[in-house]
Image (cartoon, rainbow, N blue to C red):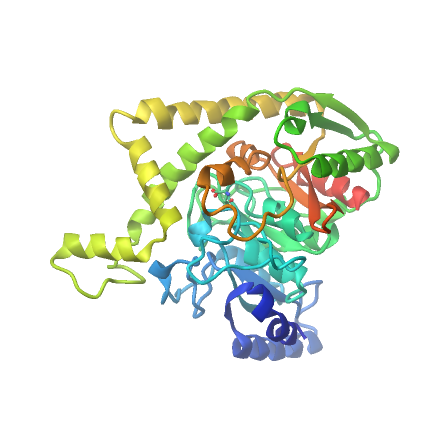
Length: 447
Ligand code: GLN
């Protein structure tokens, strides 16, 4: 049924870079046999999933939506995907994304744009736009995305689906092609909070292959699916509701807060300082890490190599000039600049200090509140083509999501209404480190 839906809807939506029809059917039969034999039980056995194209899948093309990886077939599978396979998942294919997860609209993909299933004149958000559109268009039951600065939460908001960015270190990054290594986390994208909690429970694990992976005691996220928020303290940062926030988004998000209050939560406004510094700090750190991570794509080890060249240096230069798109190049240049001697202290070090202060501001807030509530994005999904011409404006749209990555916190986005034109609006709930259960509980009660 999922493959039929893909066949029917891909022409309009284009969620996938690769659909593995044969592989999925073969795997479905194998899983079915195991289920019949009683070897596979559990909620995810036999359920079809779509995987963002920056997670390695053994034997299946993995492009990061970049020309530079147009022919890269990994020899191993990402740990999070392996965990799903152990639970009996059936992989349908790989979803479209912004090139190397750099972007907020899925328009920087080298393989065409993905469209918002609610209105195909609009973007699905990004960078996990393909994963979110695939869930919204019912081409799969759920999907995996990755979130470096909002790439699960913002497109979930634009596509009217639910997504979780877990606490940094909760889901292994082994096999996730790195963008900003200190910020990247894999997480679930699904139709509701119950599905997201179930998937997170399956993909989260301690993994010695990822040195930043954390051993946790509490992987039983589904135990937080209780419809009760009485006494829960919810903080609303005033700074999140000022200039630049669309009035319809504001009204829907505050309406959600009201509903949680009616259900017994204690809702209060507070000042979360340093909000205006999150975007500059994030773009310095993310680009610095990206410039280093993308150095490995040189035409030697994997992927694209230019056809004609004169010596090794010329080969590197031509391969990278032809293989990377404009946004990836912009970030490699910005990152190399802020890391270069003479500028390192002024930009990179200062950004790291700002990151530490942002974390402290959240620590202070979580002394008082269980959950922080706000929008996921300042607007609903923009029209196709609007953001590409103005990258700075696109960066500013990340205002509500990126500080969560800088502080390593968990966040969930779920639908809380639509605007006048019928496009979905997302509510974001942010928790303290390792407090996924609190945000899941609040989200479940709201839903
Ligand atoms: N929009 C942000 C960026 O372009 C976040 C992307 C992400 O989370 N991967 O960097």
